[in-house]
Amino acid sequence: MTPKFEWPLSPHGGAVAPAAGATSASRAAPGSRAPSVLIAGDCMLDVYLEGAVHRISPEAPVPVLHLRQQSHRAGGAANVALNLSTLDCPCTVTGVVGDDSAGEQLAALLDRPGIHQHLIRSDEVNTTQKIRLVSQRQQLLRMDVEDPLPEACVQSFNALARDLAHRHRWVLVSDYGKGALRDVQALIGAWRHQPCRVLVDPKRPDLQAYRGAWLLKPNLSEMRAAVGHWTDEKDLCERVAGLQRSLEIDHILLTRGEAGMTLFSREGLSLHVPALAREVYDVSGAGDTVLAALTCFLVRGETLEDAVRAANRAAGLVVQKFGTASVTLEEMGMAA
Image (tube, rainbow, N blue to C red; front, side, top):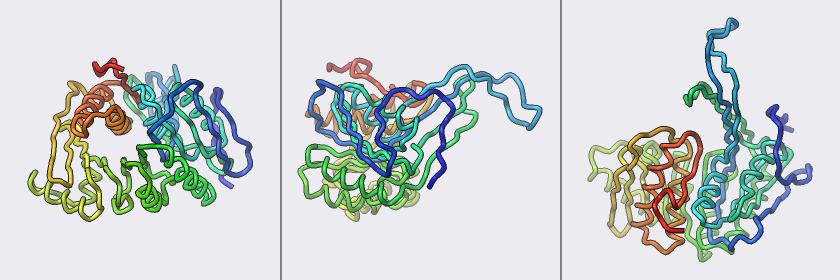
């Protein structure tokens, strides 16, 4: 059994599943609308330990951080859910977390209107965490806490994700390579026979695992790993078209950092939207915001092209914030 990692901080609220194997803990905020969006993937807790550095340790040539405050934020699939909630788009989120204080904290962060939680809780794993030590909003060090997921947890997740997809129009796959989506190809294959569209934020270099999705949202490094280096935009278009045919994917939304994002469609249509951010402060979780905003506006009935423009606008706002963050419809200048 994996040794438990418990960060020595006071845990906060949240429901705890019985500490015996893997169980499903379901929670929904009262009075929230029925969601049409399901998020399935790697749920994580982002921990920020912020302070000031005034000296170097006499024990080793490393800075000494004088801790002043700590904060917890939802990461991965949980951050996609939080972004959708902030955009007033009800959703369901499922993933695997530990039966520990970090899992309690993550459940508490997701305990807000519009988010329906269906989390697999297991006492055999630690909740995945990214713990960042920060001085003057500059990262000094990141410590990751993560465990390989037992097969029983993955199978419980697969069964729950298949069942939940029946009730949703949109399925978002948030893959951070932490193990919940070990069988993602089988899941997408099952979802293709249901009346839902699958949008994927990929992590693994082999994109074949996402064959059959409706939309794939890679970044530049993920695209290069899949198709190699391209010489110009024409070469890129040809390589992406070949990838779409190979993977049977209708749309690829390539996020390109400071160059904005480009939508490629199998019909031959493409759209490029330049980045809007005047100053990039922190890109942590920006991909989660793009996926959430894109889906939110599709749910609202916008065309895919207009949803991409809205997602680009959301990305331009969120990268100007520190840490894993979200944006509101009001910030985007949109009506709720």
